[in-house]
Length: 446
Image (cartoon, rainbow, N blue to C red; front, side, top):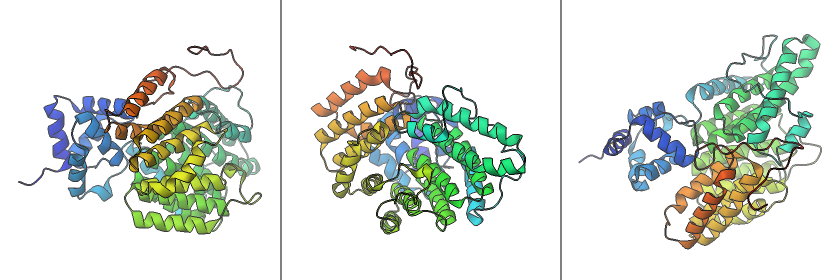
């Protein structure tokens, strides 16, 4: 008997449970901590119009209570994998950004912002509140300490303010404001992505890319696409992530600093590894190593201040985990997970370190590392950081009787009230305190 295609299998399993497509989408969002999946995407999967990526295949197995191999084997037989776009970001903002990225890569200095105003603002996160929005550099540095759940409104307010100034500017002021618009849009997109607003982030990145092109700054345009690639890789769309990373590298490599070239190549490597293209990932990693040993002070743009040798090493470790090579990945990831002063970065790389331990069969160590990463994610207030731990949690579910797994589950339950929005429960967490001086928040036992 010929095995059914994945779409038919998913529909059968859903009907066996008596669930609607809406119910299945809600169960997946609650389990994975991602709020953007809808019944329309379930319909596309079942009609074989799209194929879920590895991220969603794993959670489908958990929610439908079937062996993961049953779904992955069906997916491997499906001949539409190469055409499947990313499910978690929505097709419209993704397609709009990719269209602009193709045009930008053909001519990175093309004046894509031809109108005197910035762009149609529908769908862009340019609202927000003016709570102590300082200089752009200050907001960038705050991002090291505070998550997008807290900072996204400030980033959106700053972007909206620049857009309004540009709308009424003359030719001279407009040329001066375009780089500021591009940098503000990139930071706004980064903060929105960290807060779990993937569609809003992609809209901001599209505006940032157009502004960078109009400003004649290919390097900044490449940085915008690197950020967008990072977003798509994190929400289960490695094909889209790889496309944007390659377009960013193609358009920016001649104007890019050594650090930016290395960053773009690392984005290519991670997306290729997540998409199962191991040879391409290895080639990109090797090229990133040749691009620079470590970013040199004074040669990197100010928006790349955070990139250093330790960060590049951690990126290498993350890609090695995606390639299934946990041994060489552990040292740089361990260093990044224990790096002081960057709680979100420690949480993100700690999640990858936990995955490396699981690949090596070290369940006890994986739980310990994941527990520390979870607390760092709470400190940072970053839904994206918490989301990185959902894959760890899914893989730990394969060891339900292990004492360390039970202890980790108890820790997740204990910190659930303090998780930022978009955590592993999929339900909104409490409103976090505002950035800046305020009355102290009372915590249990403190």
